[in-house]
Length: 123
Image (cartoon, one colour):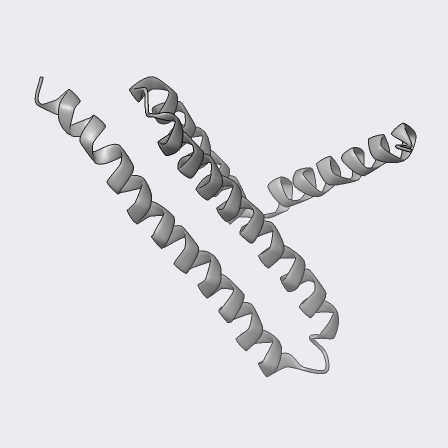
């Protein structure tokens, strides 16, 4: 049986996590800005359903990965006094993972949006 009070609290905690990340992480705010721009463009250009699904999955993936990166960074900051150089390497790897996913998403997004933008430009 679903306990709705517990479920409601879970949603509240999740929203607090989103709020914390948005307030404290500049990269997350930048990614949210671009996510809104991409979603608006997706709606205005009339992309097909499969393209919309890909775009929404990529946006969700990037924002989730950034939140995971933030979590790892906060956890590693607890270890910093003992493992300073190793912590830096781990943070750099996580930042690299977000960068790589963002770059891949940018390429896929460009491939999806190009025909629609090309059609508008050539009218």
